[in-house]
Length: 500
Image 1 (cartoon, rainbow, N blue to C red):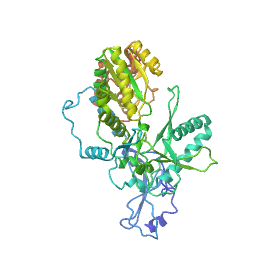
Image 2: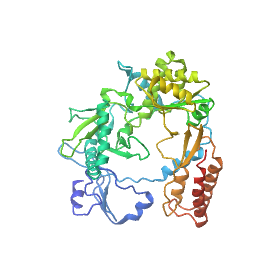
Image 3: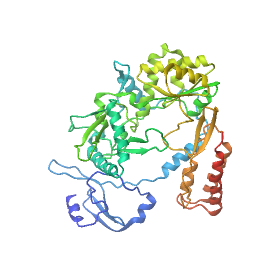
Image 4: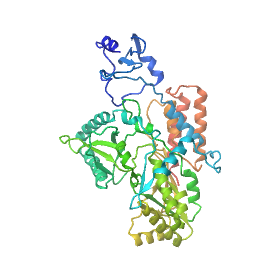
């Protein structure tokens, strides 16, 4: 391999720093890769690297052999990613949303991996002296490969890039620092003294700006999917766990069977669950307040948003609390097991008196596990008054948006508690020309109507998809003029769906 590297040392490489792990700047689909190739191919002996000339410069690919203690070698892997999968997945979910899952009332059978995940939770989960749950991260292996991927070097590069953004936007930096300092103040992170410990994983982090929030607009995202130099990320090594909660449509239908509705959500749900000491070093980050300071090493002590096992661990701990302490709170146990959608409680009752008792029992049950409910809302103002007067807990102001998943929806479903009605809110992106099949499918697939209340709109969208397919155009081809006009009219008419 050394001979090949010597031969190509004078070439202009597409990535001069190919031997240094870094973030991906651009993904090329298979349909693009062939168009950038140029004449020029340098081969070494069998098993050595190959250099290929492209419009971007020379790229290296191939197999890296074994090394001895006196040599160090670096490998570059050329990977092609097709973005069709995302659109296909979205489209499949959109088409199947209103179809009842097969065997919805049947017993659920876990896969071997899901069974293993359950075994780890049952065999390792403990509670501290306050009742808070302490969980193990459900690794697929007892020796996760992610800790050998040089993640600290990658996290450092990402952090230095983040600091440049801080310099350009002091207000953003102040909000970001406030979030990190809150983690430390709440003992959800601590400062690591053993900075050079081997076998640790460092998570890059960045911010998502939420302009619609009236309070904290910066949300820090910890990138547990960032791969190391060995191509493995923390999320690669973690099991996701089985689904534990009913589908949102079932919760909504059951919720609306009662005349009085009651909703709330759990404060920082993930961060109420401790991670065992043996696994906190898989959740390290790099941080400093100012560029002149020495970089500190922090680590998450709680379940971390961004890790693939976090939703399972959070919901599983909540349900375990219902099993462990639910007998003392008969009105709360089944509601915790069946009326939560992630951290959102959506339950109901027949009378105000029953509602007050539900509030008391669920609040006390969750308190036993270190959880706290906030943002109480109801379609019954008298019930809200009693809750607020009794506990001085502020109620939710305005409407409540029903959460779905990480994908923002074009068509959002919102509950107007004051008028006790559902409102559909249109959130279309600006029209991006040219209008291609891919863009249209991506927009349509994000329509959200779990209960079929907007069937005329959804059916129209599905028929439009069929008509696009019948044209035979490619994913990135512009729509024919007649279909383009129909799509523009459809977008315009969607705004008329802002109805209750």
